[in-house]
Length: 264
Ligand code: KIV
Image (cartoon, rainbow, N blue to C red; front, side):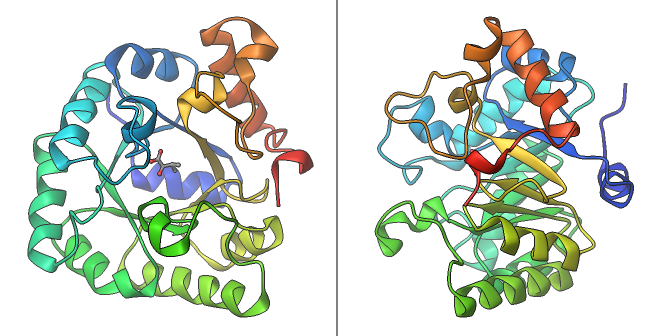
């Protein structure tokens, strides 16, 4: 079976057919997610926190992502696979190209994701010109947690909201094929979604995005501590992991997740 591709993901946006995405880090969950109808799996650097027990995503290495990406690829046949570029693995052009190439060639990813606004446009241009599809991550950027001083909703005022729209446009122009928008007001996410022609996937960004992503362990209630407002414990609703994932897919596709209580 061949995997979902970017052409189909763009079509899904055009048809207003919502894209259901989750993180995963191993073959067993990858299989369960695929069986439940997930379209896209992200091997997120969130693995630093939920798998390795680190305080942030910063210690995650390219080798870590490659290891988990290979396992996810082995567990599935049809989902589209995105690998995160870890902190500082794309700090300059040379690093960006060689690390992205490793994630694709050794990890088996179909796309890489990197954090940052218009400042990353030249990197996106460089990668896409070499045949590496890029997903740009905007809004709350977990790799910048120490600079920003915590995990906070972004784009709340007119100036930062406009900056985010301009960043998104610049990244699409540079060749990005997808955007992940984390923790921004729902109205701003709707504006970005309607402005761009590429799919916009939200996490804490309201229901108007072209699709949704959550950290797998958050949505099955395994993450210790307080669950983020934008997440939901689907396992508590259903009582079994397979049905929890299936309910997430159904709710995302029907526009029933997220609801108003999950948005800013
Ligand atoms: O690392 C990750 O899991 C992510 C999601 C939160 C989008 O980037």
